Length: 191
Image (cartoon, rainbow, N blue to C red):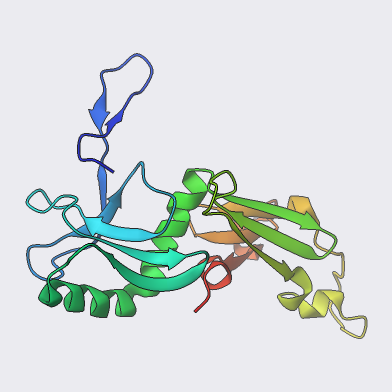
């Protein structure tokens, strides 16, 4: 995305897209992140004033974890960034998932016990889906021999996407301490 990207809010003057800094000084002098209006594919790019949009790496491809440089990035910078991404991958994926939910790039549907997450559902060539059985996460609720009291099956209205936690929130209607959360990055991206 160009550094001249503009956001227009009804009744206001256009403003530049704001950077979200995810990794600071990797290596010294290079801040990495993305802008609040972005390409729908997980990546990091330089967002500091001096190097804005100079370097970029893709971190996913069709739902698979990758580390792919875009263009030529000096080896010293690339190695430092790759090491930091390896160490901070879970954090980066969590932050990207927050952006996906905020931008409507992630949808959740449930049919019976099957939950389907569609990533980038309206973006040709970027869309991928993950389907899982909710009973894999709530075994006792679905096990007829289980001694738990509440064996009511989980319904679609019991699941919402939580931007704040980058998770599927289960039982959002319950008080906060009684809700369950399924961290989305561990479901979305595969090695």
